[in-house]
Length: 270
DNA sequence: CTCTTAACCTGGACGC
DNA sequence: TGCGTCCAGGTTAAGA
Image 1 (cartoon, rainbow, N blue to C red):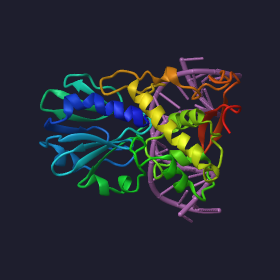
Image 2 (cartoon, rainbow, N blue to C red):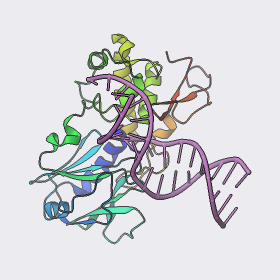
Image 3 (cartoon, rainbow, N blue to C red):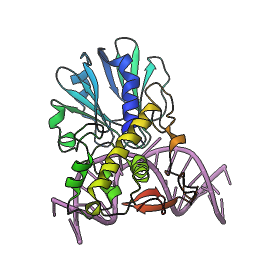
């Protein structure tokens, strides 16, 4: 479910309530997430102050003195600020109870999300090999072009590869390729420098636009404060199969690339 | 190395 | 109502 804009919106929603706060208790109700939750994790976090709440790709990073708790929302996860007395719902898998009376509550029906511990987050195996942040200056058309050299994979799969660049998931990959006028099936290694410049700019623009509107709510995404994202109404192609292209009016196509639904305009994208 | 595929899991929508 | 099928915002591990 959540891509970079949704994770960033979640982060911004919980920062005012949780950054700088003491974690009074950690309750794990369901440890069977994407990776089993370490039984020793509550003991490590309890009593610690959350120094910062950061983000790396789609991971939220709760940094404390002894280490960092990594939270990934997977496909269907959400992390929300609730009052301590808020009734539990099905699939509320863990809570961080804070000293200010608020609780960070993780909800995830499909359990593809995760809660992990790292003494040094940047060296954790799941973070160590990640590509650059798309909104950083080092992520550019030149970087994409150099990284794509010799690769034959479809460009859509290429930009969704977190070792190439983090945070670009299935919605924003289709959206960025539409904005850049690039066909999603084109081989990554056979795209010009000029077109990669357009693509890098399109990725930055679509992610920034989505963050401004609080992300995209299709089914079950809600921010840290429980608000839906309003970028859905700005989508040009995603889940618009057979609808008119916003540029040329021809019907948007839906195909499957790398097992994922992909939307594009056959006339505007080459 | 690069690339493809299966797998992890629940629930909602839809057809019969 | 129920049952089977398909689909869903992510990511890794295994295999070719």
